[in-house]
Amino acid sequence: MDTISLSEDSQQVGGATFQQDGNFDRSRQKIEDHIAMCLAGSAAEEISYGARSPGSGGTDGSDLQRATILSLKLEASYGLGGGLSYRASTDEAELLNVLSTDTDLRARVDRTLAKQFLRAETILQKRIDALESLAAALLEKLKLSPHDVADILKPHFKVNR
Figure 1 (cartoon, one colour):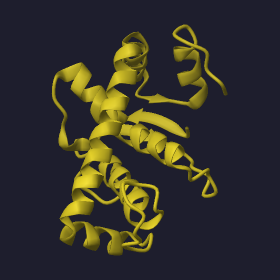
Figure 2: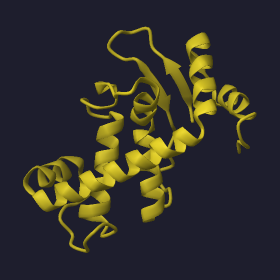
Figure 3: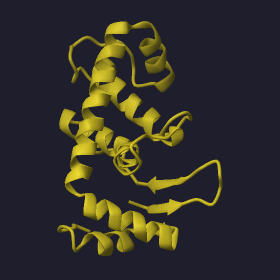
Figure 4: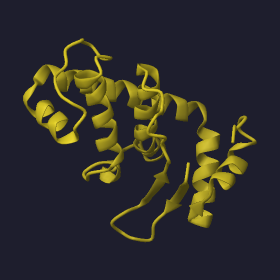
């Protein structure tokens, strides 16, 4: 993790930024882990406020867009989803075009996203005290470093730095 912050800009509530090694393990499990991580902010809103806001979607580069692209790569490019057929390259525009025309692919991507959203929500429910501590610290400081996050989460469970 690079930073986690609340923004004073009314157009953006805030978020976390992560540095991802381009050579990360692309197994189905690792990709699903990354999808769940992308959807965790929306899951935290659902838990904390009883509803999600449009903050995680709606723009290129948003959490929802990144999760959707990863799901599309699983299903349409990598052969790691519900079928083995190659339907598109990993080019985002091509993937989104195929998604708009292929109802079977769209259903599989939606199932993957829903499953990983539920997974993120379940993990956060089990760690609700950690979520609340992190949210309180973020409200107080507005910006947290990876070291700050580790210190806040340490009492809740072991954190590997």
